[in-house]
Image 1: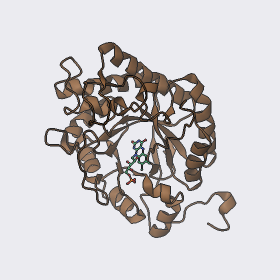
Image 2: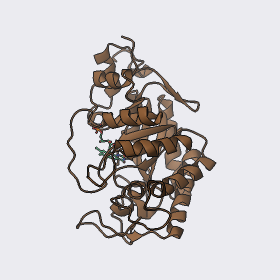
Image 3: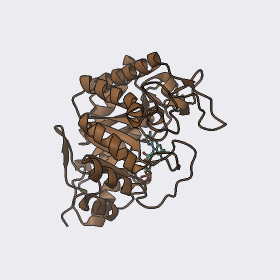
Image 4: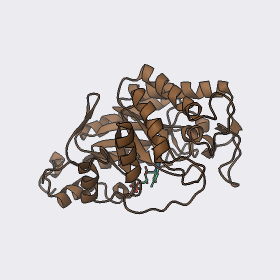
Length: 338
Ligand code: FNR
């Protein structure tokens, strides 16, 4: 069978050998609480490159120490972080994977010591700290931290940068009216709520000419929150700004139940792709080759992000290829038993 899943994808001169992306997944494994790449990260990511994943996306990586979900998060807030990522890139590329890093700031969902920051002083729930509402000076510094992260990502040799604008972390908190109650230029209208992300994209693009992805939560699952139609507007602005792909997740902006089923977020990726005319990534309970093939062939998304299934099966590309009856290249050391 001719396969869309195993066809290459090229963006700004970066070619993925197939459409399979290892979805970013926090490993909380920087045990010295210094944000450094450790042995676990090497083993974990490189295994999936051996497994023939087209694009390996490194987990949410904090651009500021106060923007960590936990003290064990990876970080890119200092020049000392570059060497570890450089070595990781060297190893991943040796196995033929393209590489990406997700630049992140946890906002009010940070669980580190000291003050935490958000657009408005509203806690996520009664177990979490109430954040400090960011001043315009704080906003400026945070935009600069994303830029510094992008410069370091480039030095470390990543092919693609993704901005984490989903799951109720800082960028998402500015986008959603549920978490952004500001009365200045960064809150109120849709345009104002987009301003923080607009400034980050603009500033990052000044130092980074490679492919830029943005992950969004395309549904707040709340009557006063945002839905995929609202994200068509945001995605069309992202497209105007030169973002290459929107990676479409959902939820976690406020505590709200999510009805989860196979491909539960694919419809949002499709709405954004057709509504804004931008490439999208689909993610969320995509676990079989046939399911991935259907999404791509019907033009619902351009890349397939796989998270938990790749934890269970680091060779999932091989599993999916077998299911689709497609021959894929084996690592040369495995040719006799692939
Ligand atoms: C995640 N997810 C996630 N998402 C993200 O944007 N950045 C991150 O760092 C993480 N971290 C993370 C850790 C772990 C252990 C899991 C299981 C998940 C969400 C993940 O990328 C994906 O969107 C969801 O897991 C849904 O996809 P699957 O697992 O159904 O394929």
